[in-house]
Image 1 (cartoon, rainbow, N blue to C red):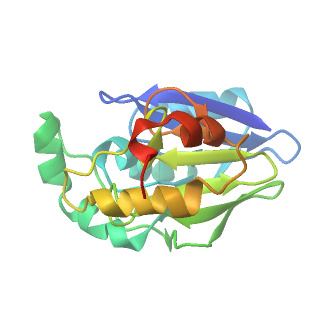
Image 2: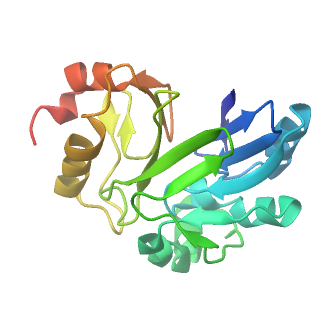
Length: 210
């Protein structure tokens, strides 16, 4: 498996490329910006993009999705409960003092339980509302990998003070959907360094109650 995670945009969202050397297929998660760099990295591995998956509808995670789709033809997956986030993209851009990116409804609803990925790399969508109403995580069980968006971070959790946020709900999502995963599962969060389920279960100060 090819895995590259790198920061994009002014908020340094973690964009992740997952690819298979055998088939030459790839998935990109959270192309928030810097589409030219994403395309360069795909080309360096000779990968053809098959899916664009967005963990939630905040500008720093979805901002480059339409441009990446236009360049590659790959469909966009986003949970439909985050469509209101797309409708307020001008407002989100105003918070950051940047131009509003082009956005569009997803090609497919990334609903709970949906199997995503490529031929030899399949993952499951886990609905984890709380950071936004439609926040999701992607769990690749054979690889013991969780791409967590802005639900769970190393030593922290996603903020809940923006529209659609709910502190009680994000804690419930983490306790019910993420902490039961195997402790060795690597967590790639939406920002910052990777961690593991075991480490967060044992030491994350936000998770001491349910």
